[in-house]
Image (cartoon, rainbow over all chains, first blue to last red):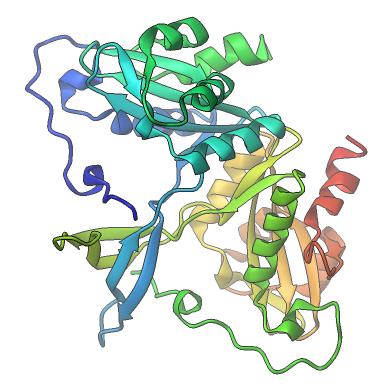
Length: 197
Length: 197
């Protein structure tokens, strides 16, 4: 049912640095790592509390060896029914997913599952701040797309094709690839969602 | 490092019903199941979006059998660094942990880890609504204790002893054991946190 997530097992290896300093792609970091370190930065500076949810796993069998800790010996990946990241910023609920592509003109919609889209709709109904961070690794560009724009596109597309970069640019916001924090998505939230909150 | 969570593997089996209708303990349900079905109820009625986070697991080895899905063959339980539940209610960030005890006069503080307490402090700083739901299964009583009261107690207690039921009653709120939703914690939030929001 669920394809195994390669990225959990094999760390993404990027080509060696080409001496462009402020770009995590050149430092052998995956986009996910850049988000995680952004969240760590926000947490350490007491700016926001955002965590990645653990990978959902269905545990079938566990061994309990003597004098050592429990070992899971049979388990399977489950498909996530929500997004990967959630947290709190100035009392507001944040909820987002991060996706990366090597394509230059579009984000493949197979990156988003029906359950995740539905979850985003529920979050929007509850007035949560919900969005996706889309990284185009070849272009070295990152976009913040509000979930409302993703949901609208998904309803037309039904998860089969691609979301053009033009659509993303028109409905989203470019996120600077920064040094620290690396993916400063809260700047977008401050500017376009909270308006000087 | 981490003791294995028994409850993941063995379902809690309660004694047969004693014909008290509105009490999940008598229906063979654990407190956790009652919370989960409460969250399902809130979600289905479009009242709030609250999910339990997946159990954190450190994946060490995965087999990829031909023609079948990936099988995790070595993994270990990791200690949760955050709380179990988070979500959004009317734009507000909710964050909580649920704990059950058979004791009649106190909740053992070993139920709360330093990392979780720290996480609650961070959430409170960001103005999230953070709390614990404490179920005394022998007494069939459930309490909503604001995280601020738990953190205060933890700072005195340092996680070694027990938090008296008297302290919980004084600083928290009784939650009705309801039929549907079974643990109506949002009633407390409406009444004491949002004040007719």
